[in-house]
Structure formats: structure tokens, C-alpha cells
Amino acid sequence: MKRLFGTDGIRGTTEVADDGDRDLLLTPELALRVGHAAGWVARRELLKQSVQGYVVMGRDPRSSGAVLESAVTAGLLAQGIGVIRVGVIPTPGVALLTRQLHACLGVVISASHNPVTDNGIKFFAASGYKLDDSVEEQIEALVSDLGREFPPVEACQLGSSESGDGLRQSYIAYLLQSWRAVQGDLSGYRVMLECANGAASVVAPEVFRRLGAHVEVISGAPDGLNINESYEYVHPARFAQRVIDAGADLGAAFDGDADRVILVDERGGVVDGDTMMGVLARYMQSMNRLPGDFVVTTNMSNFGLHDSLRQVGVSVVETSVGDKYVMRRMLEDGGTLGGERSGHVLILDGDQTTGDGIYTALAIASAMVDAGTTLSELASVVPRYPQFIDSISVPPGKPPLDSVPGVQAVLDGLREMLGEGADVHARYSGTEDKLRLSVRASTSGDEAALAAVARQALLDIGRILAA
Image 1 (cartoon, rainbow, N blue to C red):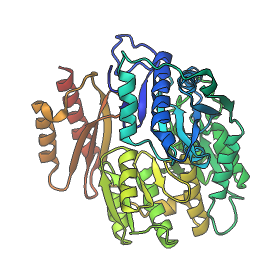
Image 2 (tube, rainbow, N blue to C red):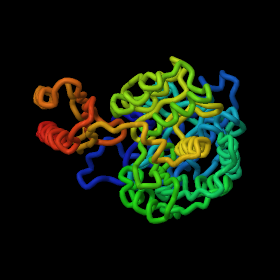
Image 3 (cartoon, rainbow, N blue to C red):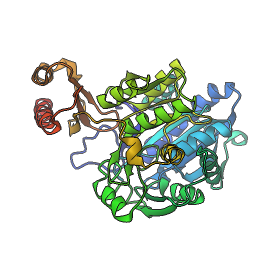
């Protein structure tokens, strides 16, 4: 069996590709086995801790979610672990409820920003943080041992399943309580939400309306098949124009499970994760909520963020790409702010244990209200230096990049062409069959020229790997 866990849980396709050649086919049978394995580990390892013998389970609204949820639930119940089914809810809502209810695990059936044909299984520990690698490895080893059977426990020890639909309101109440504006609410503000027909579709509009904002919702009617259909979270060009046309003060585009957000200011300017971290670092520093005066991000961050924060005495610490690496470094060093350019922002305040797009949007809105200014004005403190980030599809079963001389020659040639100060980084995606290339300049310059040479290098690498 191919490797299960990537940088963000298990991710795969629920439909057989034309060539039948995808890294992972996520079937109900596999989900059942994952449920058995997770239940097995929970009974023998996790219940030794002071947690309850049940899991909190939620999902995004994609069509395959219900059957995969049922399959994972069946495996858990058969191993004596109860399940509280919260239904459609943002991923961070499951993390929060897992922590609040002292559950032994949190489980989310979601493929985030991936197309509807994909799905995934994410786990949270009782703490609300992503599951430790060591526990994921135990689950993966059990699932991959195809000769291993998982006999159910005795009838009197089987787990029970119960509805937790009402718990969504507990998450909404938490978001409302997190509002930190010192002067009033959002009355008089116009907010436009692009919910990707995903898990934010009910929660985000209710939260912003209850805070007094005039809210307009786009892509907020999930039917199981239209999740991430607009793709505005990744490229919010049309959304930006609609924000301008509506005269909105703030636009927020969420991904499918709402753990990420990309913002748009009143002028249609895109505010990505780097800019949000630049704004929030200043805001949190002014409130003595940025201990150590540092922010953790990845080696795909824009160097403009580094220069911007250096001006106010805040340092930037970089990790490998992946929110779990950012989180790990934040916990090790006692950080409260970190994230990725993609809009996966981590604010470790109170009960926050993972990225939360709605919470992040609220934090930025709070900074706007406190400062009495516009989002474009707040965002202007973070310059954007030339940067290229793009990806190309690659065949499954990819060789390590450093083992392919031709790839290294292309990367070395690109570094030489761009000169001193430029940063070139290539990696395989942890969730898709793609290779991602990031190229960063350390000063202002011609972004179109940088993009042209970087895109050619990416195409050259793709041809080498396909050969």
C-alpha cells in the first residue's frame, strides 16, 4: 500500500482516474480500515490519558463525505470508541470541540481546497493540536498490514454514535467571544464572504452578521458537488472585483474546510497570509500578545514580510512548508503567531490550536476597527517583492529531487541567472501529485521577468521527471 499520511492527514481521490494511476484511492473500504486502526490505537494508547472514550467527527459538504464519515465511524465503533457526529463544520471547529469535550481524538473528513473528486481524513489529538507523527505512524502501520484483522470488541463494549449538530453553535459562540475590538462591533461595515460552497457557508455569515456587519455571501450554497468550484480562495480575481463593485470594506475568501482565508481590501487588493501576518504582528505586539517578538513562517514567505517586520523589531523564523512544521516551531519557542503565505495563519490565543480562516478574518477586522482605518492602509506596511510560486503535475512514485542530476542542474542554473540574494526552493506537494517551485527576490524589481525564467525552469523540471 502506498503511503497514507502526508503533510495534512490522509488525502486521496474518491474516483478512479482514467489511467488508474493516482497515489491513493480513498475508498469506503480504506476509510473503514482507518477507523479500525484509529480505534485500536485509541483504546490501547490514548485512553491511558485523562480523556473520554469517544471522538468528535466533522466534515466538509463534499458528496463523498457522508459515506467516508460512516465508514470511519463504523471502524471506531467496532473498536469500542464512541463517535459524536457534528456534521458539516469548519476543520478548526472540530479541533476546538475535541479540546473542550476532552475527546480522545478529533476526526475531519475533508480535502480542504482540493476538487470535489478528492477527500481526506485528518486527525486531531485530545489537545486540539494535529496528531503527533508517532501516532499517525502507528495508525498507518496497522492500515498497511493487509494481513491484519481487527476483530470487534464484545457487544457490551461497542461504541455508540450520537448526533452533535448543536455543537456547531458552541463553535460559533467561541468565535463571537474571540472578537477583540476595543471599540464597538462591525456595525456600518460591509463584508463580502466567498465561502467556496464549503464548510464556512453557514458559520462565517452568521458570525459576521451577529457582529453587526452588512454581509453579502458568494458561493454559500453547498450541494455536495460544487465545493471549491469558484477557486476564488486561490485566485480571487473575480471576487476582488465584486468587493470593489459592492463597496465592501473587507472581503474574505475561504477554502473548502475554512482553515485558511485570503482577504481582499476595499480597493480590490489581495491580502495573503504574509501580509496578514505583517498586520497581525504589529497589532499583537501593540497589545503585548507577541512574546519574543517573532513570527514563524515558511521558506515560501515573501521577503517583503521580513523587511517589514524588521522595522518594528520583529524577527521572522522560517521552517519547511507545512502548517505542522510551523506549529511545531511555535510550540517549541513559545510563539503566538505564524503561518503560510497560502492564508493558513496560526494565532495561538486562548483555545486556538490550528489554522482558522474565520478567526483570522475576525482578527484582521478587529485590527481595522481598533485602528479606525481601512484594510488597504493596514496592508500597505508590508511590501511585496518579486516572487514566483507555481506547480506542475508529476507522475506518481516520484524520485527524490536531489537524486535527479538534471533537476539539480536546472535549479543551479536558475540561481546563477537570478544572482545573489535570490532564493530558489523546489519540493513535492504533500497532498497532491505536484511539484512546487518557489523563487524569491530579496529586493524590489521586475516580477514579470522573474516569473518568466522561473516558469521555464519549472517546465524543464517537469519534462525531466516525466522522461
